[in-house]
Length: 180
Length: 116
Image (cartoon, rainbow over all chains, first blue to last red; front, side):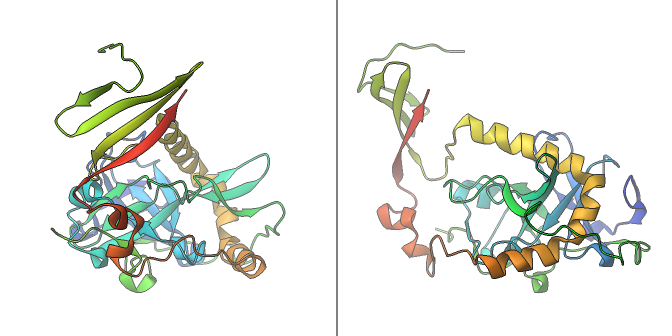
């Protein structure tokens, strides 16, 4: 199917690339179908594009790139919602946000997006312990924020991609309770 | 909304599995003890509201984020070189997780939450 998006124009999405978020992503709880879009020029960012609202797209990234020791313990309730059979079914992404004053990019490590890439189900889970920050600073004015000269190349031909295990968005570090 | 009066050490039951006990009252601060199955998540409401607000900020970042995103790889790389985060906990086996060690995962666990 072809979907219209505000950021990427018209994108072709295969039915197998659709990720259902039955509970939405708060406060956008009425919107439940997304896909992942990756642009070579914006790697390693993967865009979580809503299929029902062209203007709604979240920049996400594999949390391992930000916090190499990132670990998530998925509760039984979340594992049930996601139909997870085990850690290998789960992919992790975290949402990025750009803030002004001070200028910084933050990642929400406290509430990652968990995707069951087998069943194509997604949910934003809130981790029980306050180990991780909702606004984990990725880069700020203290760091050098430079604009790449290659910024405009490879802007064409976006395509929806799956959350791939070989990208490390899944990993053995995503834990779900064992079936009991 | 149901409004109940309780004294210190008294409880209410929510369904069959969730018990909320008044642990102490000091001025305008009430300390609650919550006993619930591990499958029930308990968070302060502020956490939910903060996640909602951050999601809205993330959605607004759709256009302004692009330039910053391009510096993500180098920024995060230099960030890691400067200060490599130390592991907060290492889970090598599900049985070694703090929750499971303290209680079997299916049993109730107790959490104390302070609400102002």
